[in-house]
Amino acid sequence: MKPILKWAGGKARLAPQISTVFGQTCEGTYYEPFLGAAAVYLYRKARGEVGRAVLSDINEKLVEVHRAVRDDADGVIAALDRLPDSDWRERYYDIRDDYNRGPWRSPLHAARFIWLNRAGFNGLYRENRKGEFNVPVGRYTHLAIPSPEHIREVGRLLQGAELVSGSFAEVIGRAGEGDQVYCDPPYVPLSASASFTGYHSSPFGLAEQKSLAHHARVAGMRGARVVLSNHDLPVVRNEIYPEISGFEHVARPRVARAISRNAGSREAVAEVIAAIGPAA
Ligand SMILES: C[S@@+](CC[C@H](N)C(=O)[O-])C[C@H]1O[C@@H](n2cnc3c(N)ncnc32)[C@H](O)[C@@H]1O
Image (cartoon, rainbow, N blue to C red; front, side, top):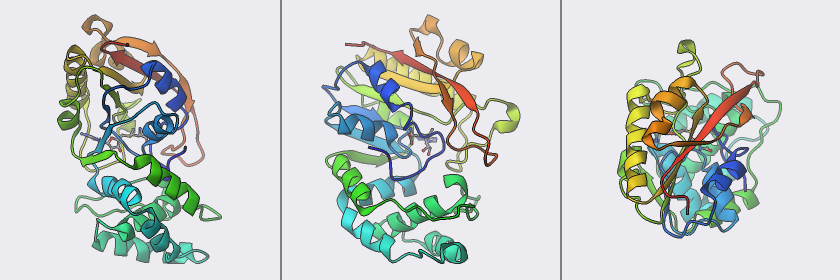
């Protein structure tokens, strides 16, 4: 089941491989602290690989979208139906202003977020220093809004999931024996000039990457299986997830980027999937 949202760094294409790295159904609680559009959770949940789940992201407005879809998919569908269709391009900046005025918790919020995600440039989510969403209108010929069936199905897969907004440490700290954790943090930039992450106003630098690796190691010692993905760079393999600290580098897939900074350029980028903690 594909996500409703397009999300920078979304893992819809890598989900089968990530699921293979977990190797088995999650008997305990499945944690996903960098949820984004929830591609990996939705893939695994639809296949019956996950039962109890705690899903979180630092972007509160994004988490509210997942909550609204879980709790009132029909309300989200009805609110989406009232947003512009044929004149979407002309109305884009009005809807963006409405979104920035709030409320940021309701089916209407979720509908505006989904609409802007589909109508805005490259599906990016970016806010200015005042916390206002400031992505310009996209260059699409048609507006592709997810269908009511798609929204209902994602809502069904989210039933029973605990949705939390906050930083990764709070959630990983809860994982222990029999649990599984998938961590998909903002990428370590391929070059210094590519440091834009575009998810949220808070930066995710090397210190945060290393802190995440530390939390993953500690959760692994408590008996959780933790799988992490990032760019396949020497700093990632040797400094952030070094084998000497117990990380396995399980796979190194090359993925064509779905969202690129330069519209139209979709290069194949090497990734690394690392894991720590008991596999079975
Ligand atoms: C690469 S994206 C995840 C994409 C997701 N796997 C998917 O398939 O859609 C990284 C996510 O981490 C979130 N994030 C950034 N900093 C964070 C932090 N300190 N704690 C938790 N989430 C964070 C961003 O809001 C973003 O949604």
